[in-house]
Image (cartoon, rainbow, N blue to C red; front, side, top):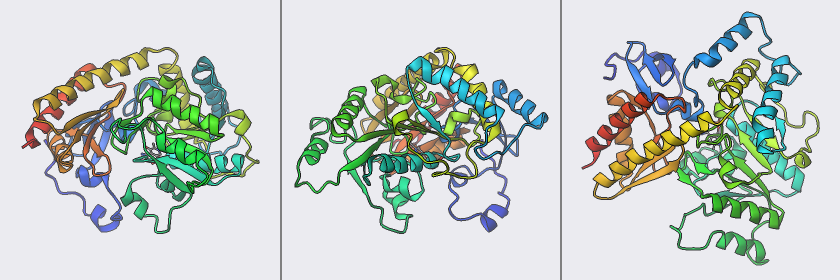
Length: 422
Ligand code: PMP
């Protein structure tokens, strides 16, 4: 299935060693539609990776493409820093009407720069400014991005090592189920907060993912999230939910924290917010915390107009009712069923993980997950691994994947898993 053609030597010759995904899938991609990517030799790959969560609506979604082409065709402004533009107004109106108001959420919207880590950096800075405190609480196996502030609250030791300087001002706490349910939730967290001898610096904020996408598809229960929100309120700590990967419908509802009925102080959104894979990010801020001075946090790319166009179209097309949410949950259950069956076939050592359409199969023998990824690629399917030892085979198809393609992918995946299990 995979291409046997040599790669153009320019990648090896010129592109930095830091390149990574190209090493997993050593072919040259050219076109992509929906849940399929095609290489230059015309071979097609079923995409269960979805741009690491940036392509929840598939590649070149026709419902969005027309609006984008029309906008460019009429010479709509492409770059305008954070000037007022007609497309920014339309996006904000749609976001308010379709996302915030129906959920009774009151947030100011900051455009922090176009990536997830830009949103996280702005959230950490703002929390420090608002509270006058510098310490952060993060969680074991959390992932928040590659810039220094985000890295300081990220768990993975290999990524942290890349910083080259000490990463400070963050204290890790155990994520939900870190001790397999052996201890009451927040036992340690509450204890060190109350104990004046614990040495914990008073935290400005807690930053958390509701499902840890990079950390291995560990999911926090709704009651754990409610407990965390309650703890933050009791101790005057701001709650930041990093919904960069699990937001925009990945787990079913638009915001992944909706299942818990909580209202975080700050929410980080990026990846699929443009709907089209274009760079865009939001930092949602409770109005009382919107204490930025004008330009206090800026950047050249804070709201790319083509991304506003496709983002607005995405909200109008997919989020006016709960059709997409229901279909995501149903497809997610189907994936869970298939993974549970696979886990049942093996003599142990496989764990079914995740929620909605963010799912994973954890391998006690970590190296098997990478082998599954390679075996899936040989069979014409793209999927990646997650977790501190890359021990989880991760399935994140587009939310818009057809039922037939979902079944096809699950069959390829099952075949790949069976081929590597000793
Ligand atoms: N937060 C989370 C939860 C993420 O999954 C990621 C990216 N994988 C980021 C932040 C960083 O986003 P970006 O790569 O766009 O900087």
